[in-house]
Length: 83
Image 1 (tube, rainbow, N blue to C red):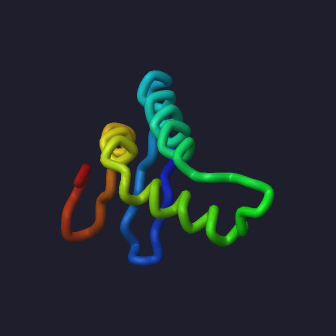
Image 2: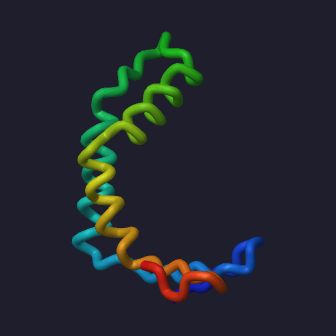
């Protein structure tokens, strides 16, 4: 487990996700990025924008991230152990 003290004083505890959960996330990202059109004439800025938009708008990636995020614990002085 890794603990990160945030500037607010809160602590974020991060643990490693199980292999199957991490692999599902990895595969979801690769599946979505297959949709990005890479050609020799493709502008790099356009490709990066397309990848970011696909990544942030994908429900499949979001579902996989939610599973991984459940292994993180955020706590601050007001709310103890929110996870």
